[in-house]
Length: 214
Image 1 (cartoon, helix red, strand yellow):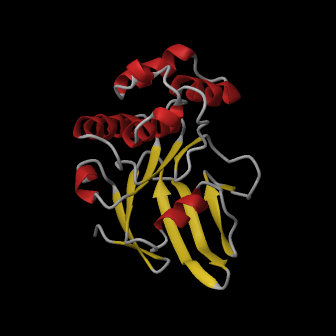
Image 2: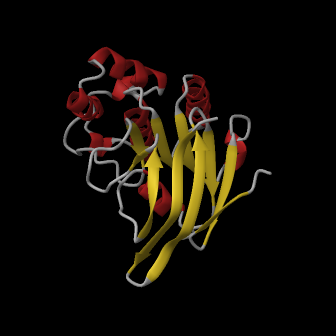
């Protein structure tokens, strides 16, 4: 299969500490990959690199054959669910999603509401974001990462705060997105929940990445 994501000798040093150490990674389009590792292993930093949120000390990342350059337009449409979600606390969950959707103008309000119903937060659509529970905030973050039919989707610990039913909804959604040819990367401690839909599994340890699925 054609290479879709290429990470070539990527190193990131912050304040003298090597947080990503000569990382190499190749992923195909239409695949789901999982990254496991302990706290401080570099998982989140790698996802930030893949999302164009940091620049390398050395090395490069190519997405669909195009070099990713920090602070420039991303080579493909991307959905990101990493750490801070950028939601505004004093407007409703629906208004947050509508505001984000208005930037690219790809989807309408009907599609936003469809996702809110899918994740069972439609009844809270008019509640201010600051009043949302951890699980509700997580659902909103997941929705914004998938709602615009993004080609590449990146998730950091997406199951935190989710109930069992919502986890099932999310896993099924990922399976459907993979069937559409979307490329998905997940960092999590809960590998077993995704094992039936995975193509690749990698482990991060002290900033180094290795494949562990055979």
